[in-house]
Structure formats: C-alpha cells, structure tokens
Length: 512
Ligand code: SAH
Image (cartoon, rainbow, N blue to C red; front, side):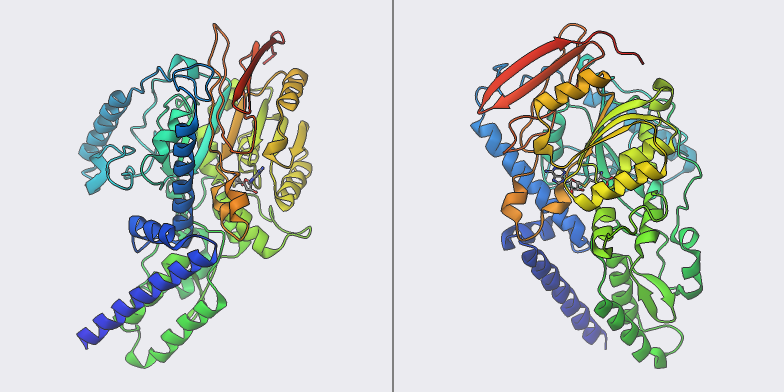
C-alpha cells in the first residue's frame, strides 16, 4: 500500500512536471529555458514564478549582451556612465543583523535557515531572498530600519520607484541596482500586507522614515478576507494565506477532478485518504483555489482579487473588459497596500500634489495607492500599451473626480525626449517616476517582438552641481529613455545609434 502510494505520488509529481513543462513550451518558451527555471525555482513553483524567472533570465542575457557591445564603460559618453558609488552594503547587513538579533531576542523567534545569508548576492544559481521578506520594515514591525545611506547623487526629489519580481536568476538584481545608483532593493512579500503573497523587489530612493499604512488595514488571512469560504474549508487544508495571484486561473477541469477525487473517497470516512488530501492541497495551493461548497473548490473571482490587491471594487469590471483581461491585468498589478506603505512618506512632502511619470501603468496600482494615501495627483503621465488597461485607469480617474491632468500614452516608445521636455516645461518636472517591469506579459506567440520590449539598456543622468537626475529603463528598440530633473535643472540624455546627446536646460524654480 505504502509503495503503491509512493509510486502514485511519484508519478503525480512527474505528471505535474510534464504539465508544467508543456504549459511553458505552449507559451512559447524554449524547453531548456523552461527546464532551467523549473530546476532553479523548485518543484513547488507556480507557473507565474517560472515565467517571471525565465523573463528575468532573458533580461540578464540581454543586459550581458548589451554590456559586451557597449563602448568603453569608463567613458562618460557611453551608455553607462561610471558608478563611483559603492553601496554601503556592509552597513546595511550589519543593521539587518542587529535588527534580526533584536527581534530574535524579543520574540524568541527562530529565524529561517537562509535568513542570515546575504540576500541579494550572486552566490549559486539563485539569490537568497530574505526571510521574513519585510524589506526595511512593515507596519507592525517593532524594529524597522528607518535610516539608510543613499549616495548623494540619488537623494530625491525627484523620486523613483522601480518594481520587479523578487525571484530572479543570478545577478539580475545587482544589474538592475547598478543602473540605479547601486541602491539595495527592498524585498517585500505582500503577505505582510494582505492575505495573498506577492514577492517583489523595489529599488527606490524614497525616504523610509515615518511610513504609515493605508487604512483600513486589509484582512491578512484567507479566513478573514473570504469569510464565506470558512463553512466549506476542510480542517486538513491548513492554508491561511493565498499564493501569489496570477494572470491565469485553475481550469474547470481541475476543479472537477478535485471534486471527483473527493467524492470517490467519501466512503473512507470523514476525511479523504492522505494521498488525496495531498493532491487536492497541492493543487489548491498552486492555483489559489478556495472552498465554495462541499467538495467544491473554485478559482478566485476577479472582484476577490481586486480586494486582495487593494483596488476599489469593480475597478477592472465592465466597459467591454473580458474576464481574461481582468485576470491578466490583476495578476500583473501592484499590491496597493504594499506600494502605498512605501509611498506614504510623500504625503507630507507634497501637500499640494504630485507630478508623476507612471511607466507601464497597468491598471494604475501606483495612482490608486497615491490617491488612497490622500496625495493629490496633479499631472500624471501614464504610459500603458494595453487599451483595456488605459480604459480602466481613465474610468477610475473620472470616477474618483480627480482634479489633475491625466496624460495617456500608449507605448513607451512614444515617450520621446521632446515630449518629456514639453511635460517638464508645462508642469515643472516630475516628482516621482514609478514603474514595474513588464515581464509577465512577454509570454505568447509574438514573443520575439515582445522580448524586444524588455528594458535592456540603461543610462544614468548624473547630477551636476546642485542639479539632479536619474535615468533608468533600457530597451533595444528605443532610442531614448528616461530622465528626471531636479527642481531647477532639466537634464536629459538621448541615446541614438550609440551616440549620446546631452542637453541641459533651466526652467526656473518649481513651486512645491
Ligand atoms: N504596476 C502595474 C502593472 C505593471 S505590468 C499595475 O499596478 O497594474 C506591466 C505593464 O506594462 C502591462 O500592463 C503591459 O501592458 C505594459 N506594457 C508592456 N509593454 C509596454 C510598452 N511597450 N509600452 C507601454 N506599456 C507596456
């Protein structure tokens, strides 16, 4: 019996691996990429984690290729200007250690085995992520980090906030950081803010003192977030948190298989036999299935995902948006409470409102977060390629009676230097540039083209005197990417056929 169970488990496992592999191949990934991702992310990894991993691996490859092609790195006219700043990593680690020690003493908590490792180094094939993944602190953290040393040149405003999936292949994060003044990413899992996981890294130059959470504090367990499921939740399904919300949901066929497995085993008593429990539990975990009736599990509804992600109810509903589009957009979006916690420090600094350049806006996680924090949105340049998503942001903008100006741009490739220049002169510059990598959308038949949209080039606008600037974002087909300015100076770079143009201008003082 035992061995039989063993064989069954084993063959289940092989079957699952095969299914995962063929799903990835169907999505257009190469078998080798899929296998590497599966090996590195482990057998528990969800499809979205694997696609994120592959996407990040491609990004690293593109980076490397680009770096190899780029002219002398030390040359200030090359795509990458020099990075003289060395990150105070030792300071950071020492503080981390101290903080963990304090926590350990206070609560007698045992720290996860890997938690004392440097967490974004490049040892091994995959990075060691911190555990618990709470970044510089979470709302009920008695010992948050409230200070960090940023290089002079990166101290804002203007602020930037760059998000990416936490789990990336070797070297990806250090490469991303390298384009952003070597600032250490803040790794946070949204389980600390909501009932669903979302492991992300954020590289930003925001202050980290006096953060505050959005109110009301959202439910942090499945049982609180989805109370109607409690009645049907079996005792042997011990989940209290959902996994990362994904762009795709479990199929009706799967939920039917689960129901059949449970019904066929009812004769064995109150509880299904262990191998059935294990199968059901694993599938539920993998696909975020919740209990909606006797022996009946179901994927989350889009409105439940909206709630778990901190969006207003019906944010993505109606106006011609399909369920598939809703899932896709929600699966890619920010977790609003998490991002809002980081952005909350801007509230006192911008009482009269904020100008933002929102890149790859999706369904407007950043805009919703700022609005929910009570930070007035003055001018928002929102760059988002999917029409459905732009419609969602526009409806939300109208429904929330925003007084500012929403400027919608469909494609990041349309963000020309002239346009940036115009916006800057008309409203006095951006206070915040915010964006997440459009990685998740790269799967699919048109992958080659989509791949080209990866940010695989980077450049930096160094500060001159009092001036400031930042640039990030890199893409193959785009001649230019971003700039920011300080209150008095506009400083932009344009990269065109490997020639770097630079121009500087003055627009006088900006009122804050
Ligand atoms: N942070 C966002 C989601 C980011 S997902 C939120 O809170 O919803 C990345 C987004 O980038 C997707 O919505 C995708 O449609 C968009 N995107 C991909 N390529 C793009 C391009 N070339 N120009 C503009 N947007 C693009």
